[in-house]
Image 1 (cartoon, rainbow, N blue to C red):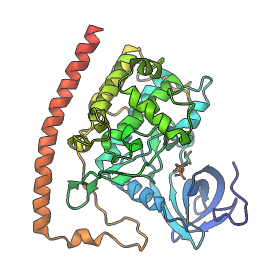
Image 2 (tube, rainbow, N blue to C red; image 1 turned 90 degrees about the vertical axis):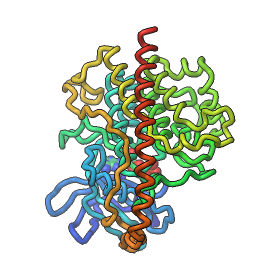
Image 3 (cartoon, helix red, strand yellow; image 1 turned 135 degrees about the vertical axis):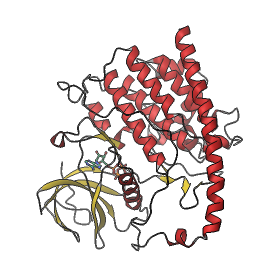
Image 4 (spheres, rainbow, N blue to C red; image 1 turned 135 degrees about the horizontal axis):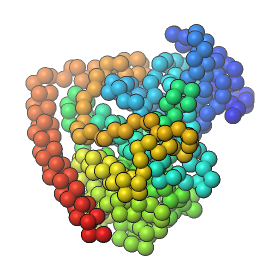
Length: 410
Ligand SMILES: Nc1ncnc2c1ncn2[C@@H]1O[C@H](COP(=O)(O)OP(=O)(O)OP(=O)(O)O)[C@@H](O)[C@H]1O
């Protein structure tokens, strides 16, 4: 890999030394480039340890790095193993801002492309799917939607640090908080929202320019998992510019069995159909008129992560996949990655004091809020959470029973 050597490119150059308040870093290689910045491997000069830096052009008004930093700090608070730790941050005046974080390995798009048939074995797809599901649930737990779930935004850890069986979630530039911090309330659904994400994996609601919720990240996750398992989605030949055609596919998928059959080619059909159904159930767009936003409750619903996990587990058992079966990118070693069951999905509140902001300030408004008012709002939130939990539990029981009945029948 090479870094840019164009004179007017503000991004770091090969071998450039970057200074922060804590340390110095030497740029080694370009790892990935996006529309607004780039990611490089670097060497920390104080101890020769390798890290990754994510840089964002100082002149961009997108400020995705700010979101990356906030999310990764949130993840550090819940001690998740699926997120990189941020160890440092700084800016190179008039050129770029950057964060220094844990260096990880290849992303899941590249790892799939490395396989002979450009698809993962079922064991690898299911183990990886389960880890990604847990990381999505954890992100939701601390109050963020990802809104760009895709294979390029997940990567395996590095062999050198013995983390190559662990999957990490990346790129939080499009994240959105769905909780009002300090008020303990879910943010109100917007009637419309501009398209965000990647056409191929975007949930139907996002393509319809509707506000998206937690369930929509799960829909994107399903598209990604199907692609790993089958080698391609029915709309794989369409480009990002064919958004209307992809939208049509995703709409028709809801009702056309032939499309569903095509989509689940060489997938564990029974279980994937169940997940598809569950994701539809969550989807506001599943109602008869796509453009009439009628059931706003669905937007706030907590996805049944446990049920989705249960389907993956069932697919693995039914296909005699063992917990120790190796991953495609390390075929000679029994799997030693995390085997975690997603938690209850309840959102937790986080400390916001150490957030990075343009002025380096903290969220003062939250502190200034009257305690009385806050307590009132919290009580409302707790009541709603209790009600939601009860509904969720009923729903989970029903889902489990339905799946067992369907599996018995077939
Ligand atoms: N911590 C890291 N360690 C190693 N590689 C990384 C790391 N973070 C990102 N990468 C690599 O860089 C690529 C781009 O990262 P990321 O998606 O965060 O940047 P981006 O500029 O937002 O890209 P895009 O605009 O394409 O989404 C990833 O797909 C991954 O391969």
